[in-house]
Amino acid sequence: MSAFLLIITFLPSNTGLSQNNKAALTAERNKIEEQLRTTSRLISDAKKNRQLASSQVTLIDKQIELREELIRHHQSSISSLERSVRGTDSEIRSLEGHIVTLKEEYAEMIRQAYRLQLSSNPLMFVFASDDFNQASHRFKMLQSYAEARKRQAGEITNAQEELSETRLELTEERASVEQALADQQKEMEALNDDRKNRANLLADLKDKERELRKKQKAQEKERKRLNEEIKRIIEAELAAERASSKGEFSLTPEGKIVSEAFEKNQKGLPWPVHRGVVTGNFGRHSHPTIPGITIESNGIDITTDSNANVYSIFDGTVSSVFTLPGAGSTVIVTHGGYKTVYSNVHSVEVEKGSKIDRGQKIGLVQTQSEGTALHFEIWKVADSEPTPQNPNSWLQSR
Image 1 (tube, one colour):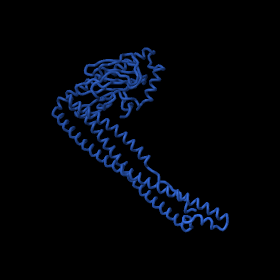
Image 2: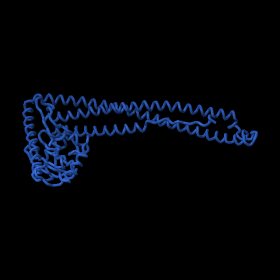
Image 3: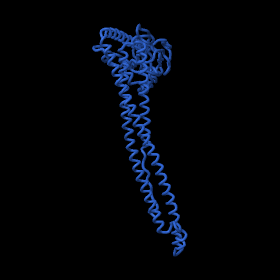
């Protein structure tokens, strides 16, 4: 009977894991490509509007960074696909061996049945028994043989179908590898073009370095004035709150709830504009194109489309709205022990003292000679000294 009763162990498939990896890689690639499209459009707009070459260089730097990330992604995707191809190829070889074994066992089962006259004359095999018990035993053997033969034939058919599907999967995976290699080559060529454009712009900047240095120093002076004014107003707001609470800053029960909710949303807060790229980083750093110029920023600059909508990133109360020449309007929103700052805004739609919801429109981003960028800050004010926070540590990853 053991020759007839075969246990078939089906091979484990790596398809589920491959599909999960493929979905994750596709989602990541789509995200990078969307950022690249945004950056390319902003570069095109900057050229049309004759914005400063230094602004274009900053955008191209971002585009180069994204392309390098996309190329690394393509390499990761290619490596993953090649591993999948090797796994599928190994699975095909195992399936082919499995089918050969099944056929050999099936043939052996037929030969044994022939020797026992199970298939040529099954009734004679039963009636030729010496007694009733032997006849009963032979009848059961015939039933087992019929079932085993049917099962074995079905297993061969299933294995052959699985083999055909796996071969098709291998063909598709190899096509995906070829496409990924072509995409990688295309991005590498585009990266080389970006680097050439950057070199040309830097050469242009070199010829105008004295003029640009003068303009940049004026911009840094305006930035410093804006930084000081924002800090002064935040400190004035806190001083007013201390005066109303007997010399100590303390959150109201509602303020504590909002503050805790704000903290819980760290790394999950929405961006204040729907599309854009960070072209000005938080903290103290050297200017990307002009030697000897140091930039100090309490927030980030997000270059975006002209007249892009500006949105509040969380529920709160508008605590200040003011305007500085060259910096547009600035809106400060209080979220309990935190404040968010939105600068270079025009057509402001909120006013001091009004409640504001997460995602509510504040105004539009103003376009300056150096481009269209929202300056955005986050401050923690619940401590003894208000301190600016790096927005990249609070906003959703892009």
